[in-house]
Amino acid sequence: MIALGCDHGGYELMQEIKGYLEIKGLEYQDYGCFSTEAVDYPVYAKKVAESILDGTCEKGILICGTGIGISITANKYPGIRAALCSDCFSAEATRQHNDANILALGGRVVGAGLAIKIVDTFLNTPFSNAERHKRRIEQMEQAK
Ligand code: RB5
Picture 1 (tube, helix red, strand yellow):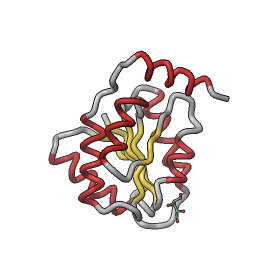
Picture 2 (cartoon, helix red, strand yellow; picture 1 turned 135 degrees about the vertical axis):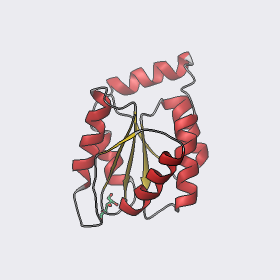
Picture 3 (tube, helix red, strand yellow; picture 1 turned 120 degrees about the horizontal axis):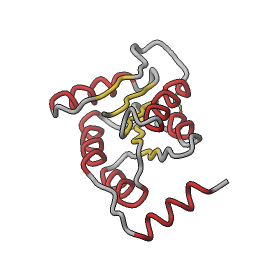
């Protein structure tokens, strides 16, 4: 199950992502927002982060205008590793190296075609399980 969350700046791109997930037969839980009316992105970052931390969802996708505010907020939750990506190389690397559990996108930054490729890469790339990456993630989780 994939958790989805966005603000008004990410709403339109999220509709495209939902269409892609539906074509692929991938299940998602949509935590909003549900229109282009202005809302506060931390509300949606929290909903998606908590759905991953409580085991409801395995991964998440968060979108705001830049992807910055919503990813910064998500990364405040211990155990969340949200990666803001605007290219497929980063989406692949963050799964392999960081075991990122949330992909953040900028709805005003990337077009729908590229965003869907980034989502596809993120969802289909496994964590490498390499010892060095596990060690670094452990260090990351303990950072204060
Ligand atoms: C909302 O206008 C905008 O600030 C938000 O979508 C995001 O870009 C914040 O980082």
